Length: 76
Image 1 (cartoon, rainbow, N blue to C red):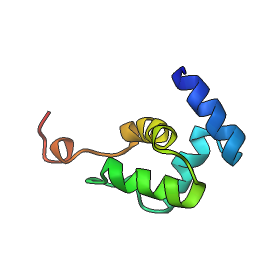
Image 2 (image 1 turned 90 degrees about the vertical axis):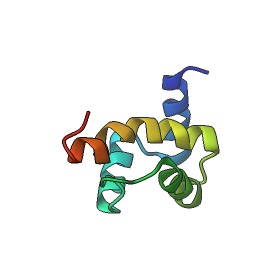
Image 3 (image 1 turned 30 degrees about the vertical axis):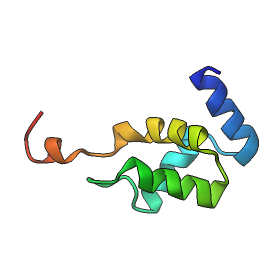
Image 4 (image 1 turned 135 degrees about the vertical axis):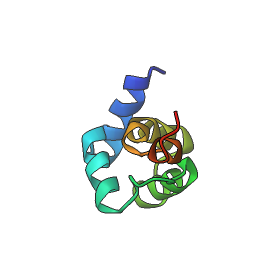
């Protein structure tokens, strides 16, 4: 299954796009430094009944929006 197919299936199941998930995650304070994949995956499984693979696909979309501790501390 392609990555886009994962996103399409998630939209079919939840009615939400990746941009919708970004907005909801930001509203819930999940796009902050130090947020771990497991925290986001658990939220997606609980609140949206996504399976692990689909939750990880959304995490992959959200990850660039999560500041890393290294970047915050001036490290690369």
